[in-house]
Length: 317
Ligand SMILES: Nc1ncnc2c1ncn2[C@@H]1O[C@H](COP(=O)(O)OP(=O)(O)OP(=O)(O)O)[C@@H](O)[C@H]1O
Ligand SMILES: [Mg+2]
Image 1 (spheres, rainbow, N blue to C red):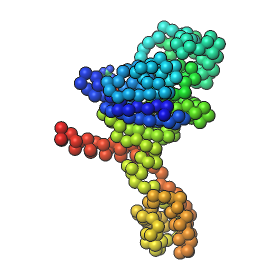
Image 2 (cartoon, rainbow, N blue to C red; image 1 turned 180 degrees about the vertical axis):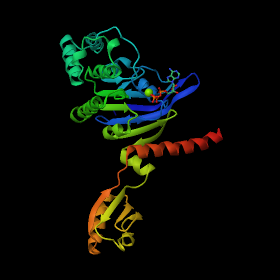
Image 3 (cartoon, rainbow, N blue to C red; image 1 turned 120 degrees about the horizontal axis):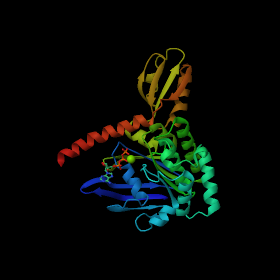
Image 4 (cartoon, rainbow, N blue to C red; image 1 turned 45 degrees about the vertical axis):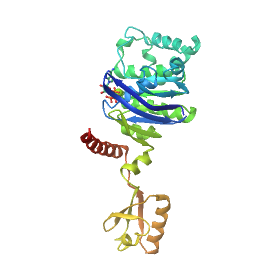
């Protein structure tokens, strides 16, 4: 596991911001940590990067314990967290050179990598601008450059595209995909952009009020919270008795004269059988396609169910 957290907990005074969070991300995977404002995402990321010490539980990132080996974590993990107004008087080149030294890169590496990454994110023109003169999105790109400066095997990115224009956000997503697929890097990202999470993530974890309420691949979560995959079939002419006749193969959910929807746990087995049955009955099928489900549908259902269950447990307290 490149990122592993076990019952990680953070309490501020008596308020529990992160409550026994356990996460596991294998090498080369992308985990998206989703959840409403104030759910505990940033606090979790800050603990995973040794910025904030946990109240209880433990975590290892890139093989290093975040409490006892903070220096090793810093050298092996790239971090993007919410921006604070630091370093405003520094020029970008100075800022990157400073962090290059922190990461123990030699002079030529520092310069080479800084220039290449600034070029990649379209910031070459602003190398000698002071950070105080950077726009919000430019600052965020610079923070990403900083996170990637030392080529870390693990990247923890807290809302990497939140302030970015659509083209820049796409560049960042492409960059994440490339680093994952071609170089096997491991990512934990937080985002409120569910389309982005669906595109990038191998695994999705949802946190609410400090607790993980769902964790799995998109398909697993979709099955668990929405149900089995749904297919839609369209025919040229009215299909007469086909719907009734499919009952032994799939579950027909709804139908009209020339269409029907069915659900099945295993589309790859059921669909060919459905098509054979239609052919036997002399029904011409025009299309048979999955009814698309989005992470937004799944996420909204997860939050809804958790609201219901936390309401019940609230009465017992
Ligand atoms: N230093 C702190 N002192 C006290 N409470 C804090 C501190 N940092 C965070 N919190 C609280 O912990 C909770 C979780 O905050 P956190 O920043 O982790 O949320 P988040 O999931 O990142 O939200 P967002 O989507 O808005 O970024 C919030 O209720 C917040 O007020
Ligand atoms: Mg946050």
